[in-house]
Length: 315
Image (cartoon, one colour):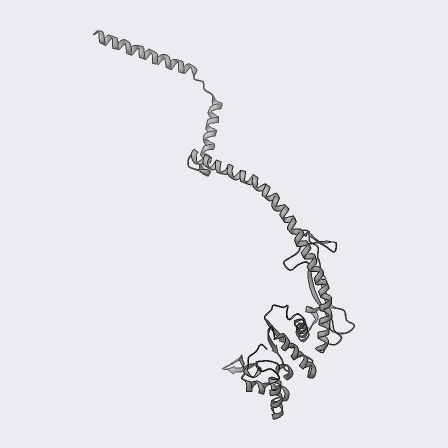
């Protein structure tokens, strides 16, 4: 019984201690609505961060560290941008110097090109014609090259643009070549240009149409000679009705029309040597081919070129 009483007394003492502790804690509790709202806002903010950057606070903190590193790198990039800007200025100075030098050389070269083309055209029976080169340098607000008191922006082809001018008759003003020259004139002007620029030009194939318009005799032979010269470095196709020009070629093609059913079809085929002779002879004498025209055609085709009879060559 004494032990039971002692245990009961101890339990009562413990209960009193707990009650005292609870009363003390209760007295220290303070309800703060502002603090509660602050905590709720913080929890809402964390919930929003979880939706954007991770499933828990640890992932959010890892993302924060990643952003901090990137921000530090961006700060370093500003220095890189300054260096790149300085490099651009240096490169623009180099480009500007080269662009101006190229423009000056083009201006000088245009003068010799003008006289050379006019000389070639005179040999092609285009007397009294004039040829010119017009340069234009439109200013550009983003330009960094100063040329002729204008700010210009260079392209991969240099500064400004150029246009070929042409006057077909004495006393007429020079006008844009593309707008006033006929097909035959354009072909002969192109032939003149190619004769001058043959070695520098990288275009592998040239096609001439109506290059023989309005010419014949010795002038036609001259045109043929120039075409042959161009064909030394280029593949040349020429549509012609003159035997003097056709005879210069290494091989010939004939365009033919034939009716198939109710439709007319066109075709093209390469001619054998004897067929070439007949076609060139027909250009000289018409449909009635004579022995003399065949002999003359054979002489034109064979000429002094050993490859002509084989059909090999570039013209």
